[in-house]
Amino acid sequence: MGASGKTGRRVVRLLEAQGAPVRPASRSSRVRFDWTEPGTWADAVHGARAVYLVAPEDPAPIREFVAKADGVQRFVVLSGRGIDQASPGFGEGMIAAEQAARESGAEWTILRANNFNQNFDEDLWHAPLRAGRLALPIGATPEPFVDVEDLAEVAVAALTGDGHAGRVYELSGPRGLTFGEAVEIIARAADRPIVYEELTPERYREELLAEGYPEVVADSLNTLFALHREGHLAEPADGVRQVLGRDPIAFEDYATRVAATGAWS
Ligand SMILES: NC(=O)c1ccc[n+]([C@@H]2O[C@H](COP(=O)([O-])OP(=O)(O)OC[C@H]3O[C@@H](n4cnc5c(N)ncnc54)[C@H](OP(=O)(O)O)[C@@H]3O)[C@@H](O)[C@H]2O)c1
Image 1 (cartoon, protein in one colour):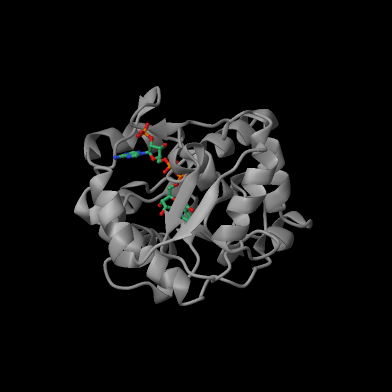
Image 2 (cartoon, helix red, strand yellow):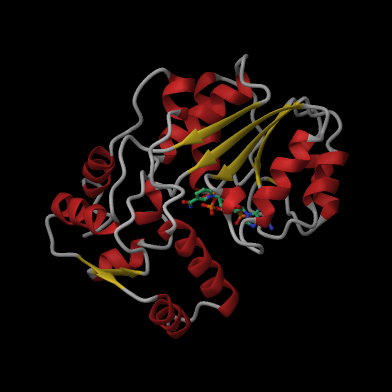
């Protein structure tokens, strides 16, 4: 699932490289899968042995989807670190996906990830970085960002290998960085000035609304950063090493690799 997204795209690519039969599923895939259209579910999972489950934000359809996917023998669920400590209303889709997989009767593996490196070049923080200023209400709490290349490799191991059933893997990068440090590393790799600015949650909300984000997104992002400021996600975790037997990709290596593509120029 999420086959055109940051993690799913790489999971598909790795499975294809192994010669594993893989059916990409999302609204834009050849076999269309839409969480909001139950009529699309059966074709997407028909004959599938294992599902990489990328939850929608709305938890409502997840239990029914998992119940209907009765031929599926294994679920590998993408989730977030600290999801148990999150405030009510945040991450409900991921919480419901974890629960549905655990109760499915099939094998399950849960991947609880820190913030992705790729948020800086394929998602929310890309445009601000290109504009030369990333401004967030995060404080000095470090974040051990995880590279999605590592996450995808772990997901493929769990989808195709043995010994991962019933496991919850906490996935992070090798060390915590403040957002200020992360932006400095990116600026150095991109060889141009980019500043990090600390905002109050109120000011951040105002900026998001001014940029056209809906209130629900602004509030959800503020909840996410409140969770970060509490420091629950600050310590590196060893899930990448447990599964892949090697250290996770360093943020500096990610920044060098992506800067070479001109993504932040
Ligand atoms: N970003 C982070 O730092 C982070 C950290 C931990 C966990 N997570 C979790 O990761 C998940 C997102 O995964 P990602 O970053 O790999 O994806 P992504 O880059 O956000 O892309 C979303 C994917 O979901 C598909 N999609 C969107 N709406 C859909 C719908 N109604 N039905 C079916 N598919 C739909 C999209 O494809 P189409 O447009 O083709 O449908 C796309 O492939 C979220 O649950 C998030 O909470 C993110």
